[in-house]
Length: 283
Length: 183
Ligand SMILES: [Cu+2]
Image (cartoon, rainbow over the protein chains, first blue to last red):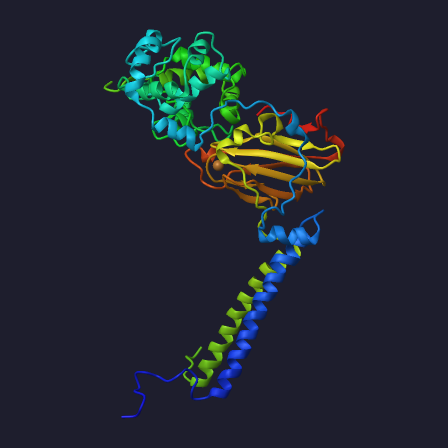
């Protein structure tokens, strides 16, 4: 047996050390050159050529993604920027406030104050005027209360009530109503025209109207503060769509509802309201 | 044709076909390489962060400040919010043949920004302001769909970019331009 077994080969290229070395040198040179040329093209030549009005150094810094190198255009409009549609933001603090809220603490408030109109169990005494709150999303109730307090949503009845509450109280009472059991309903799809049924479930791509369910349905994926619609009274829903359409109500951040409501015909708004009024699920 | 049995002939054929394939691949790579070099195609690089949770309170992306604005020095800036499930504003007028800076951000999830028929294309990532600089050559409407799945209403999320000829280009006293359609 020789010193090195056939299973453990010697160093690569040990047969021809000279030719191997030059091969290694030239491949290294080629690869290094290729990388260098690519870097120069990608980070120097292309950014410099495509950036109009930027000096080469800044263009290169921007291409490298160095913070502070970006040229932010002047913004004279910011001086007279409109007030935000709502003060409520979904920051970590807000989310923490909502998740730390106690439904038990909200009970007293619901009994003493809210219950007279919205019902102690969240079933409204007059659903055409006062929305049902049982099973409503906590985030939605909290946001509307906060908007009534700040005046971003106008209501002569709700403004003084909301102004008397702390943020913790709003979160607690929202948690209480979110935990109440709503009536067992399903969308009244057989009661309305087919077209609106499609609008509610699939939207209208031609007009750029997303389906109502994409934000207000049980499997929604839109903004946190979008309320659930099923089980609200038809006249209440229709009135709110009308208020958004006429800009009377404008606490929808980024005009999400105003642009949609503006495009709905009165017939569609009416039919959608009936659809979400719902019917007993056992029917 | 008689089957090739000669070993040398076989190798020659193999070599010829290998050359054709190599040639085709080289041409394809050359097309990509040269066109991206000549047209300066590269992903827009702009690193600027913004708090996505409070975008709605920001001055720059306030409702009144969205859309197209022309500064006193003539620079055109478009500010857009991409949110579930719409672009704000939904129609964006831009002047033909002038450099335009487009600034987009998202308060919620990742959206896509693409202006059909142009090379404006970027992702809109919450937490960052995406910026695209471009010049629109021909007048007319471009579709601007969201091209990154963002939720159930994604397929209804689109806006229009209206390229207006210089002669018809108009702004109001504040330098804002609006489409004459109400959508
Ligand atoms: Cu999107």
